[in-house]
Length: 174
Image (cartoon, rainbow, N blue to C red; front, side, top):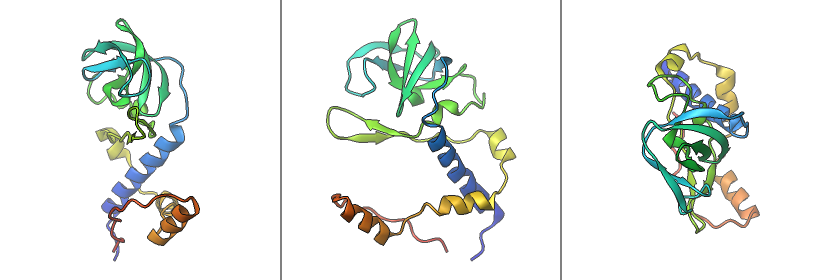
C-alpha cells in the first residue's frame, strides 16, 4: 500500500529528529544560559534520589555547565547542582524560541539507587521547523535500515544472555 507524502513526511521528521538527537547527545557546548520551565530540585548528583541542594522556581535563570543523560548540571543564584533536562530551556523561556538543543540529549540514566533506568523523551518540533520540513526518501530508508525483526532481537538477546521481558511489537506497516 502506498503511503501519502504527509504520512511519510511526518515519519521522516520523527525518525530524523531521533537520529539527530542521538548524534548530538555527546556534543558538549560551552556554558550556556537557560531558564527553569517548572519548579524542580537541584541535586548533588544526576539521580532522582540524590540529596537536594536547592529548589528552582519557574523563571529562575541558570548557567548550563554540563549534560549527563537526561540531566543538566547548572549554576544558579540558589546554588550549583543537577536538574532534569526537561525542566530547563536554553535561553529564555519565551514560547516558540525554537531552540530544541537542550532536548536533544536522548539518553538514559540511573533513576534511583536501584537498577531502574529512565529514558528521557523528546518534546518535538516547533511550528517553523514543521513547516520547513521536506520529505527525504534516503533518510527514511536509512532510518528503516536500523529496524530489527523479532527473531533478530531474540538471537541478539540469546547471544548476550539477556533475560526475556515480553512486550508487544509494532504491527508491520501495510
